[in-house]
Image 1 (spheres, rainbow, N blue to C red):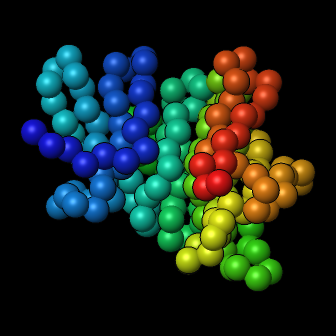
Image 2 (image 1 turned 135 degrees about the vertical axis):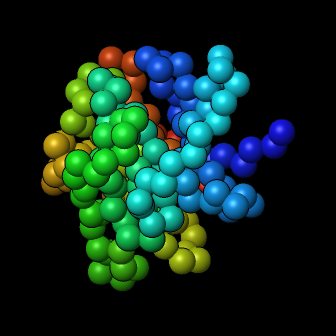
Length: 168
């Protein structure tokens, strides 16, 4: 059986994988939870317009879902998917609303995540900087647009954010 999932993450506590269902499926835009031990797939609507990147908070209590339509990163309870907060990414003076490209949750602090931002539309490169978010507040210091990473991850102890620019 073929399952079109993008932005797949693993929940080690529950032993499941979660991904955004791709556009080739009738469940497009929903979250699919795959339980390999039970051999089951369940679908849930995250109530986020055009869900994109996702990440699981360090304590496993919330899921972060980026909206490719609004530029929001929405915090949802996990596994219930009730909205508990959101943060909107900045507006760029020339390119408009920035969108989440990649989200990485801190392994040390459930309220901290890094988000790489991209310009919508057909601009290349799409990179628009990386921001650190604490308790749904974007921190003032960000990386420079166009010379930053579109894929981000925290190191294993949560002290550094590592980036990769896959557009070069």
